[in-house]
Each structure stands twice: as C-alpha cells, then as structure tokens.
Image (cartoon, rainbow over all chains, first blue to last red; front, side, top):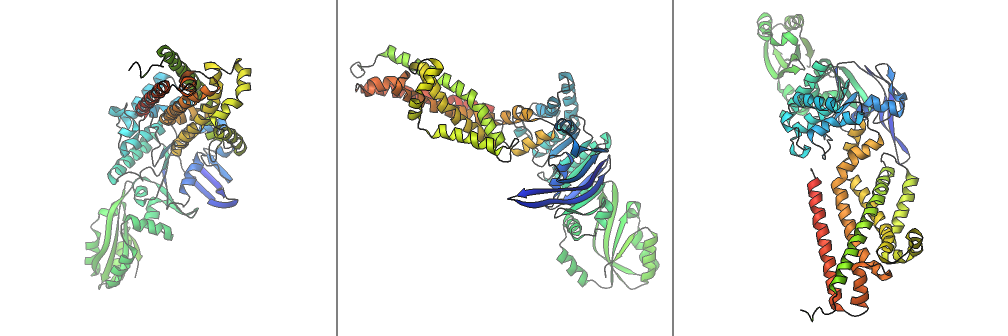
Length: 335
Length: 221
C-alpha cells in the first residue's frame, strides 16, 4: 500500500518557489492499477517520481507498506528502488547494450544474483514479453512497442512489488498501445503487482485502471473508481478528459441537444444491464417515443458499460423514469 | 628524383617518424588517463548533474580553461623547469611528453564532458530508478553510452597531439617537427620540409580513418 500524507513538492526557480504538487493525501492499494491522468504540467510526472524518490518531496511523508521511505538512508533507498520497477515514455534503454543485457542490467547492479540466476531470469522475462528471438539485438533495431516490452521486462527483472509507468504508451501507435496495455494488465493479474500509471489519455485509464486520480495545476481534483469518475465526472477537468476520449466536441454536443425535442436524458448502463433489451420495453410500457442523440457501448477494464443520450417525446415520462430506475440504470436529466 | 630529394636522409626520417609516433602515442595515453577522470568530474559536478558542486566545477573548469588558452608554444617553454624536475631533461622525445600531456589532457577532458552531456538524461534517471549508486551510473551507463563520443574525442586529441608534437621541435623535442625546423627551416632544405609535412599529413589521415571506423563500430544508434 502506498500512502501519501500531505506530500508536497516545489522547485526553486531563480530564487522563487514554484509549487509542482500542493499538499496531497492519497492511498494506492496493493495489487491495484492506479491511474493518474492530467494535462502536461499538471504535476503527474512529479507525483509518480515521488513514489521512488527520484524527486524528494519538500514536505509530508510517503509510506510504502507502513515504512516511511522519506527517512531512508542512501543505501536503504537504493535497496528499496530495486523493488520498484519503472518504465518510461521514451523507454530509456541503454543503446550500447543488447536486449538481454538491458534486461539483466538491474540484476547486475543489485549485485546479489549469480550469473546463472541472471541468465535464467532473462530467458524467462524474454519469453513473458515475447522477445526471445530478439535477445541479441540492440534497441535501435527494435520497434517502439518492442522497446517498451524490453522496458517492461527490465522493470520486472528484480521482482518488484510496484511498477511505475511514466506515459508508457504515449509514444506508441494505438495498436501497439493496446498490446502494451494488455501486457500490463496481464502482469498485474498474474504477479499481483501494484501498478501506478500516469497518462494524458483517458482511454488508457478506462482500459486498465481500477482507480484514477485526475490532476490539474498541481492538485488532485478528483479521485475514485474508474467507472465512477469516467461515467459521472464531476470536475470540469475530468469532464474535458472524458469528452476528449469520446472524440466529441462539446460545442457540437450542445448544438445537437438544442435541435432535439422533448426531454433529454443521459442513461448510464453498467455491467449486465448493458446487454438488456431495455429501451424497447420501457417505450412500450410508457408509450414514450425516443430518439438516440449519441451513444457509446464499451468496456471499463472488464466491465461493460453503455451511455446513451436520448430525447423522449410523448407518453408517460414518470413511468419511463421509474422503469429505468428499476432496471439499475443511472438516469441523468439534461433538459 | 635523386636531385630533387638530395638533402633527404631517409634513415633520419625513419627515426624521426618513430619518435613522433612515440611522442604522440605516449602523450595520448597519458592525456586520456588524466583527461577522462577530469572530464567525468567536470560533467558530474556541473549544473543539475548527479554531484552538482558549483565551487568544485568552477575551480576545475578554470584550470582546464587556463591550460587550454595558453598557446601551446608558450606552454612548451613555461613547462621546461617542471619537465626537468619530473624526468631530468626537457629535451628529446621524453622531454616533449609532459608539455604534450599538459596540452592534451584538458583538451580531451572537455571533449569527454561534452560527450557525457550528450547522453540522454532519461537513461541516467532509469539507472537511478534501478537503485544504482553514482559509481554504477558512471561505469554501467554513462561511459558505455558515451563511448562513441569519447572515441571520437580520442581521435581529435590524437590529431591535435600530432601538430603539438611537431611544434615541440622548437624546444628540441625530436621527431618530424624537429627535423622540419632544423633542416627544412633553418637550413632551407625545402625537400626535407615537404617530406616531413607529407608524412604528418599521412599520419593524421590514418588516425582519422581508424577513429571513424571505431566510432562506427561502437555506435549502436
């Protein structure tokens, strides 16, 4: 478990104090995938680097499994860092070392593994990230996705309990992003590793994260289960992120809504209710006519969800609303 | 042909070439041995680096700059008492090596500093995140990543030392430069001058070619 207790960070720039992270409380549970989303400069890079103290905090304390890591000596800190893997946007592989040597590097640095142990572990990791055939290549000979898989294998080498992902998919194309995210989800499930992932894409959060913190201007403005934050965003920054990920322009949305007649509702389905033939039966029972203004059916991690914006005309609106409520659908009246 | 090169004493040229080779080789060796740690220190103590030390950096940087700004010909003369103290003579091949190192080491140190700065900061960060200490970061990540740049720096330093070694002829340093000055310049033997210069050109060409090959071999980018 990672606990932030009033953790803050500021930088001295030309004699002035520039805050990067205002005092923040946060708890990340063991074994969860925790997303931190925010625009560039929101402080998410700083936040993730506080967890392995690449950036020391200027205030507050960070507890990892009940140990205050901010009090560690230099040697203790180095030992602790071996238990925290990290992957990066630009991979940060050593260009002078082969794939195998890159993966072996953290184990060699630790100085506690025998040659045979290192060799076996590298083979095992190469197989896990499906790069066995590329063991003797240099990073420059690999594609972006392959490089990130080397990065993941390297981060896992010393069997860490926490994996930090710094914009790990931001330099990758959508398809490669998919495969890297799938690999991360797999690792999380099979190894029970806690993953802290920062990104500026809500879509990445939606696919793999259990919980998410939204950052803006050095503050966590919203935090919670991904399904809650994603389906019912409260803070304006969160809304921007959700709409961005749906590829909808908020102005266009407004125009569409103005043209529609009657009542406008947003229905949110989650889990099994997503697949129920609900709308037809509600329409028949209440005599309401509906038209769909926008809609999306997708997954949040493993849970299916649907979100529809409808305009309802005629019939008995009360009956329709209570029928929807009864079917475990979240109803929001937009107009 | 015979008449054209009447003044050229080929055995003498052979000895002089060998002397130049020894001077450049030895001074390059010591320049690298001294310059590499100085360059690493310059890098590490620099702004926003691992061991940021503004005072240490300023002092080191100043010494390097002083040695680099003194014209080599002056350095040759100023160094004479020190050279005598160090190896008993300021003449010949041996006498030329200390001033050559004094000129070559700071030059190489700057080149090392520059090539270390070219290493992606992300790689240093990643290595730190793996729990490496400073020594491991230097030897495990920084130097291997900067190797092609450092080899290119050795090449440039070697070539600079060839011209410095030729200059050391002025204070009786031996080698091709000495020959060029004593015969080519002071006795107006143009043919000797041409031959020595031609040999120096060939020497530099070979050095550059070998250096470039090595850089290419060690570049994995």
